Length: 366
Image (cartoon, rainbow, N blue to C red; front, side, top):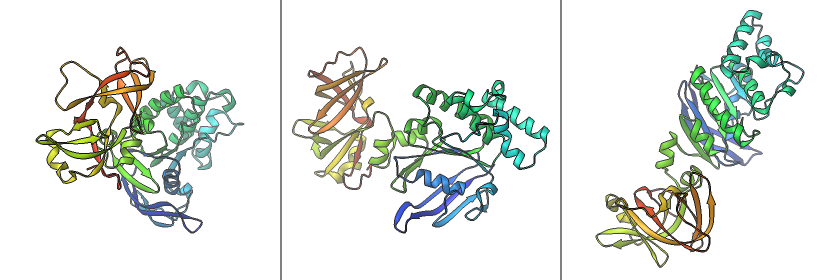
């Protein structure tokens, strides 16, 4: 096993297209790190540079203590699981998993031991004699993972491995990948555009945007303490609500004035921090779960807001309510037993203890 170090990595295509712009990242031994971001953010390019499938324009990548910039992929001691499985259709599951070991001249007994062990971990032992065409999508993905596991590499690389699966199977495979990592405990770098995958799988999440790293941290840290508007809006589903506001004096404290009629007082503990933004245009962010139905005995720091409902989405255990404030679309997460109808007024309470204040130009959370 080994740590992975990415040091000031740049990737430039066609002379002037900067896909990756000088990122630095340290991935610890045994750690499961997920690179997440929208299409074109540089996450897959970064993974392919770690794998050796893409040349580095400048900077260094180390696996363990070895700089691997010029090391061919086959000599980097990594194993990669691709989006399209890449199984040989004419070979059995056993032979697909054993293929790389045979090329490396492992003994027949060692190959069987490794394949049987990987098949046990992945619960595909009964499938070893089947051909890929006789497998479901989830089973094929397990075989692709098994082919990587038998290599016993220093690093696993996953390139959006679940994107071809249906929604139910994606949830199942997420759980299985996490269980496999707990058993095998190999350093893992995983790329996805799905922030739910990132949150549920990762020890640490790396949020990328336009070739740079916006923030790195444990999933809960990124969720509750985003450093930028981009991270705040990308992590979490439904996305965080954003409202343009002005910071104004409110009694002995400060508040966010939204439009002409909504005033949201800041928690007293934050007023000193926000004092330098008084009378400035800012953006306030609130997650849907912090806009809820009005409750009895509300805790300090909540403020009532009456809204006109546009759309109601019953989800079973919760209901999503969509409305607008000025020109800004908003979403609240309420109890399913709360009566809510389109085109009718609904009282909500905003939990300002969990709000975020941001600079509109830089997007920085203050």
